[in-house]
View (spheres, rainbow, N blue to C red):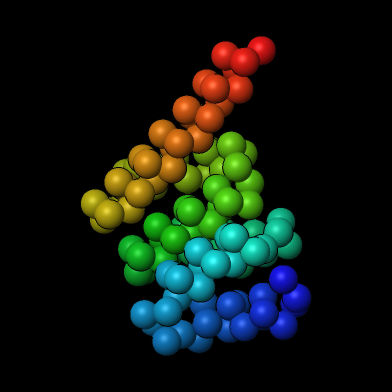
Length: 104
């Protein structure tokens, strides 16, 4: 994705409208690289639980299993939706790791 599209997503995340922020965060995770991690990581503590959930998804998309330690604390998030989404992401990552280990 070209940088103008990434900048558009960053602008949505930073300036809103609010209802589009979670979708923009997820999309940034799908098309972004390690360069966007400095934008995504602080969103793990955003006031909006939808954004926190989307940020955990985005980190997993960019970092894969290396995101585990960063998103694990969200298992104790105040929002049930975040806890459930993070649990699903961690379950998916650990099942992928088990599959890789069983193939060896």
